Image (cartoon, rainbow, N blue to C red; front, side, top):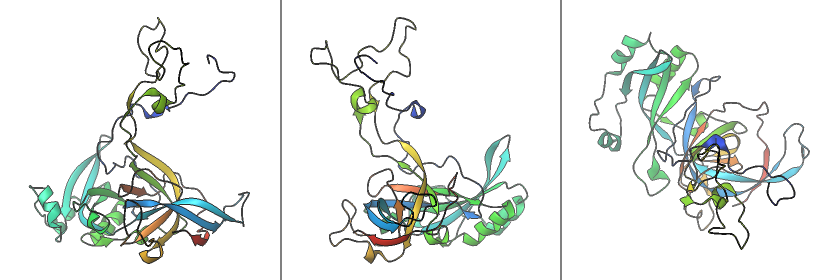
Length: 321
């Protein structure tokens, strides 16, 4: 390791290569886990971070039974409008869309974004192909006007869990209604947070990969890689740190515990409002720990892919505002 007295593991996980910019601010969900009925996800908006005091009830924890202070994140969770139903069949190992059924009360903003929008007869379209359906997804529209300056809704497909026929009945019932966060999750449960991280632009290898700054009398450069490879193999290997995009990546964080769900934002709003967000005016959720992104950034909370066994909500003694 050169002039180091002890070894040091390399910085920058190779599992995330290539480190490119996310395609969309609203991330794509690559996996919907099985194991529960009903919709498996929800779209929220990041508000900010604060501290929470609660009595630790994690079995086997060194602080079990004691009051602890942890960092937490507040996210706004305005209701989602279920504007459509997408039915898929499994053919040759991939999902093929059979039909997309739209509700009667589709917002005008969504119709403007889809010039070819044509409402389809719901009962007839579902009845013809219900035997071929292998996956049911809700087409939901966000309501960003309830949380920030943006007024353009985002469209997202959320899988409906459970048996296919049960999911089809559940999806038909929810079509044209509003979906609230409290209808899907409870306090104490865990969720996976999928979002786009804070963007940092084009950065060098020192900030991007933690490369050591060379000594003062170095030739040509100090904030760079001294040698990018040997004579053989005579090419630059992908493991060598290089400059490039840093941040604004799609990332998934597993098992964030829901500490609180409330529809009364008066108990969470500071007098001056949240920094770079303002006042929360809708339902909100308090998650343990930090999440990706900046204030106002949309995040997808998904049913956990590998949930812990312990799911009891802690007793909150103080939520700092």
